[in-house]
Image 1 (spheres, rainbow over the protein chains, first blue to last red):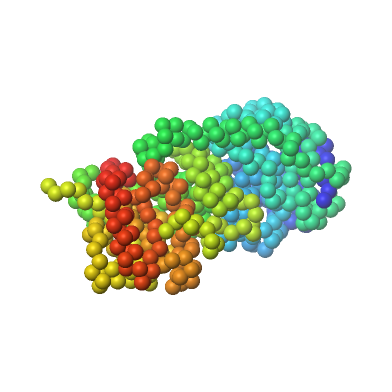
Image 2 (image 1 turned 180 degrees about the vertical axis):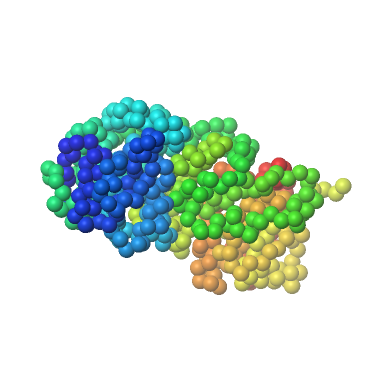
Length: 364
Length: 139
């Protein structure tokens, strides 16, 4: 497999690649982050005409929505689509494909080593432009930028796992110069045929990012410890989730929560008069809306082992609950039971959908 | 007021454990009267949320029982159940529920005696732990 030396900024080179693919008709559409010129904000865009690519900034530390989630609704259109994803977005999409919510067939996935993304409040405040130069400098040194999402700082899976094309922007090069684009699959070679740029035979070397990995693992330890500072348990849980106002925002931005009708929004959780009468007959007061903590426990049992740690849930929480950190921490435990890494391999089955006859002999 | 008695929810599969309970009954075996039985078609039918919800609604413990691995009436229901319970266990630990409050056991239709033994053991375990106050709705 070959590599392409990037002679300009990595983001610009990927934009050129998307332009080349669109203009040559190899793809019908591109999915990429885009800068909105009028209000210095960003969005994720589906672009079908190369003339609309000017505002595209494929590699930018902003996640307005987990692209894996939106991809599930367009990947089966039959159109050829090139998509630029962060590693966790790609892993989220892999999890969705396992759940038959999308397909890789017509996709060209382009991902990059990821330095983490900025929280949405910084994006909304229009601060990204001024933060970018420092951010790029820090990740080029293989360090962890301080003001990114907490789960990003604690994320050890910042190297894309199954991307067709990997763009190295962290650790070994400054985003401005000398970065390399690695074509990992035959599909990538086929699409990139005829694209300009100096070709080589370089192999992606994860060891260059060892420093970043170590720093992240340290951050992870700190983050996980912070959730159970006063020991695990229910009092702590009540402290953590007691603030929940029941908006279900975390659920709606979660790429793994794909159910069209969530159990918690179904008739199973319709609170009607008999429900209130029954509960109030046993005690004199009831929180409204009810079951806010139960909702989180439910999500934890249903999908914690598939959590990719993108951090969308914490970011959108209006009352500042560290949802993502809790999910990462418990998810790591539940996934470890099955030696499972969410999004590692599309052929790997979801742990609770399969079984082995000889296992867990301690249960029962 | 009489001494506190644990209230335990027993979720039993129709084909093995429920029949096992039945056998214990017709064989006039003695076991503590602390369980309340819910019959399900298969242990695979048990959503972990059922367990959480029963603890939250004031049960002091939950016993889930199905056919022995390999003997499921639906071939693999209890294997799938076992995985779900494996996921639930660290979670219960995380939220601070004592592990003994939620117990799993495989009991076949012929094991009336085992059923009585298991229920006795589970009841004693939970009696030792005392009333469940942790997940009970207070808010």
